[in-house]
Image (cartoon, rainbow over all chains, first blue to last red):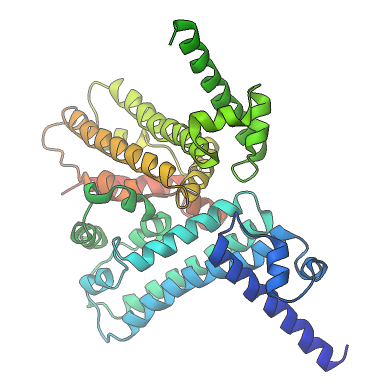
Length: 198
Length: 198
């Protein structure tokens, strides 16, 4: 294949992905029609199927990318804060975590849940999300080592709070509770207490 | 309205709900077609709309009921175990909780997540689920008082583990980790440690 053909193949793929994102933004996962994606990408439905197999394959690629951006983005944002500090306390560790009530993290939670729900019946997406989850989990475990070196000597932290508790946490439930749920301050205090090993 | 008409109105509603559940079981939330529900309930689409307004209204009713059954069922199952014991230890509290690896609770988690994801764009369902969440949350808080009376004098339990940690927990994330995630035993030990106030 000549270079120009390669490039144009890559360009079409890019256009399809961009058009899928735009359609998802407008109509959601349920409302996504491959015909609309084709129109937005100025290509044929056949071309989309050639790249992605079927509608599920297209969703697996694009929703998988979006899922990766959310969870890797959260990791990167956290580590950026941590790396700016030369020394750390348990308080710093907790304060750098996103708060339950932040609206932006709420939007991400909703999107994340819709992607997870889609993955229940989309095997390709499920495999992609499993792989992303394992990678991010291992990143968090490496981060623990990095963080540990910045803590004062003698401070003992229970990392199971990261490896068990935070890993399975879904703040959508907190939002459903409205005014009856715990406050940001209660959440931070709880984490601080549970992180600290006496 | 005569009694027979009332009864038959109730019967039709029941048949529509039963048919919706059957269709959901066969084709999932995305695949649910009101025409199929009508066929299964031997009624017209117009009749369904008269009872439930639209497809979203039908889903709000039936998925809301299913959601209620899952979360209330989990609460009832837990309390049944607890009520069989005259005295309790922290170990009993933890052992009575469902384990992350139980396949049945996994199926419920998948269904629960699909219902939550649907509620993001279905306002009626969202309101129903908010109400269910608040009711179950307040049931758990009352249960805490009941449990407290059965614990030995002097044992101090940190109920924030129930009111913060368990409330926002989603074990689907644990399943995605496969062999790399924490084990049932690690999970139980973690809960035991975090429940206990020294």
